[in-house]
Length: 215
Image 1 (cartoon, rainbow, N blue to C red):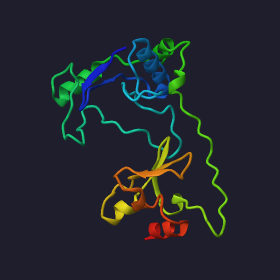
Image 2 (image 1 turned 90 degrees about the vertical axis):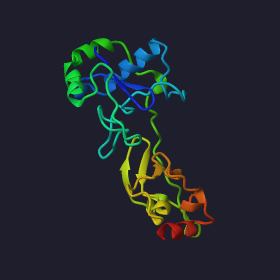
Image 3 (image 1 turned 180 degrees about the vertical axis):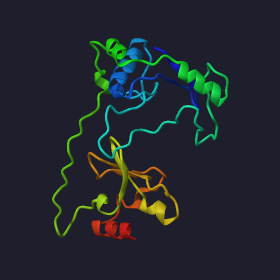
Image 4 (image 1 turned 45 degrees about the horizontal axis):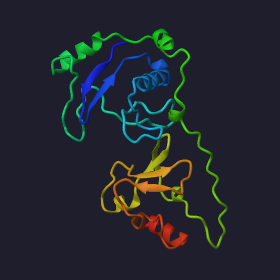
């Protein structure tokens, strides 16, 4: 099994090529078990530090997107730099030729590698209980943020939507600053740094919150 080591902004990326139909669940089983056997900490499962395994999801539902990662030989959006694989000259032609020459992992080989293995318990997806909203009274209706924002995408944990506060000052043009927890939409956060009061998570009353979101 060949692995290509690529430079990165922080540390590096190690990647292998596998048939799409066996990626990612079987590959994730192999990588997690291999890392733990070698004593390499893996981020998640109670650990805040360690290597990261991509993709993080075993499967996606219709309309969902997985986590983002810079494509090989791509330009990093933050540093505006291109990061190269170590084993080839730093030119696109040499890099592509190097990648094309790597041995491709077959599905039969991968099944042999993971025979008798399963994803470690600490890293298995958490099955979230469905959210059941409380019954609102006419006098004190429950504030439901999803009634006031239009979601733009969804991943395994959150809906993403445009933050009304950011949009009001000309920011959040991509419409995804606001993360709304799927398992309980009462919890949401603007990742651009809006305070709770600015986008209405803890305003005085449901009617006030609703009015400010409409504005």
